[in-house]
Image (cartoon, rainbow, N blue to C red; front, side):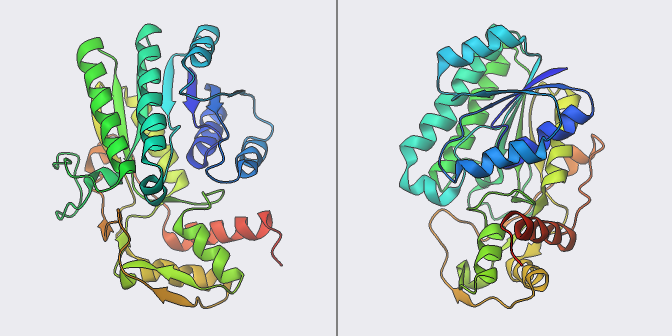
Length: 317
């Protein structure tokens, strides 16, 4: 099928594009290569992850309604995986207006164009952050999510509400995927795995928040990709779906595995909880499992793959 991936030069987007091209889908990528982190990493992702593969790439912003309309008119897209967004909880506290502009208004453009062009399925990235300070573990799609604690999380909850409206009024099939702490090679520089690996290699201290009393469902990028493809192929009508690992990992164990692969011990600065952060995110993944999906990569393998990529990309001896 002909599928548009927004944010296709991003961490998840590039890996997804690769797998979908390899299975025979015709892929159109839209990305604005913004400077939230170095655009060169995004360009290198496209050049390396998608090397030798056939796809179309448009350098465009999802907020540019006119440009996006041109792309829709030209490409005759059948399905969409909408990943383009401002990411990250902490930066959203500094630039909330930017997060709402990109994540909410940009998504509004995508939904409007999807209705106009009769898109068969609109799959979009939500986030585990919508669960806020939910104390019920694991987090289930049926849980109440009316208490977000960061602008980023609020923007993702807004996306879910927008999609529900468009499914209800215009019968646009939508599926919101709540991602749980994605990691792996070519990952974002603002994510913990990148920050910790970079600091340990450079003999710099790392900040460990909530005094290390944190846990996450770390989800390897290949498992996220297979989950997205499972949801896309299921042609869900109006659903919210968790995609996360099947094991709750303590942050200190996560750091320990990084240390093992780098070959150095981290100098840890233990700090209190950061605004907008939560102590634990644990996914109930039974809904996606019923569709035939399973996460397969443990942190021991996933972190090893990341550290190997980091050392190669940054030419670390």
